[in-house]
Length: 105
Image (tube, rainbow, N blue to C red):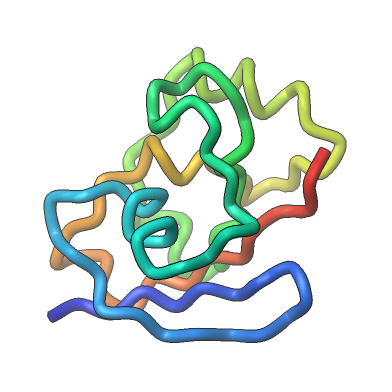
C-alpha cells in the first residue's frame, strides 16, 4: 500500500497507508488528522484543506485548476508548493508523498 507522509502544524510527522482512489484530503481526514478541517468536504469551495507539498514531490502532481488557484489566493499562508489536498487524487505514483498541513487562516 502506498505511503503518505503527513506533517502536522506542530511539526510532527506521521506515516499513513494511503488508499488509492481517495484524495489526499480524504486520506488525511480518514487517518485522524483533525486539524485539517476540509469544511466543504472536497468540493473545492473553501481552502480549509490547504497543504504545503514537499518540493521534491510537487512536480509529480497534475497542475492546479483555476478554482483551486483562486481559493489559494485567499490564504495568507500560500507558498510556491501550496495545494488544496481535496484536489490531489492519491495514486500509486504518489507513494511517499509528503505534505505539511498549512497554518489555519
